Amino acid sequence: QVQLVESGGGLVQPGGSLRLSCVASGFMFSSYGMSWYRQAPGKERELVARVSTNPDSTYYVDSVKGRFTISRDNAKNTVYLQMNSLKPEDTAVYYCKAGYFSTIAWGRGTQVNVSS
Image (tube, rainbow, N blue to C red; front, side):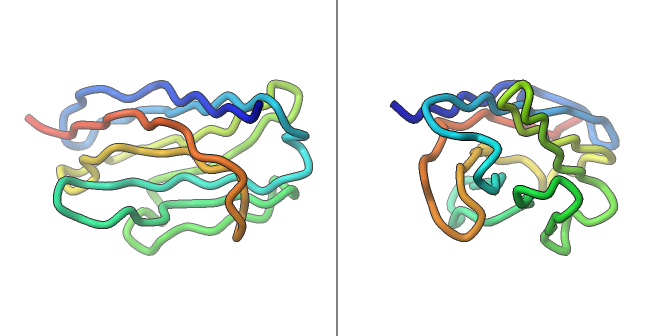
C-alpha cells in the first residue's frame, strides 16, 4: 500500500524557517520523482517544488525560488522541503506527492502558519 506521511509543519514568525519531511512507503521511492504542493484557504492547490529521480534536477515555482530547497534521501525514503525566509503568504497546507508529472499518491498534508 502506497503511503506518504508529512511532518514538520507548525507556526512560525515571518522570516523564520521550517523543514518539512515526507516519508514514503509501499513503492520503489528511488524510481520516482517527488513533489511538494500547497493549498491556502480559498485557493487552488499549487505546485511548490519537485525533484526528479536525479536529486540535482529540481524545479521551483517563482514565488519560492531562493527561499525553499527540495531534497531527497533515497536511503530513508524521504523527501524534504527546507523553507527559509518564510512570509505570511506561505501559509497553507503543504502536501507531498509521489510523482514528478504523474501522480502515484498524495499525503494528507501538514499545516504551515506564518504569522507574528
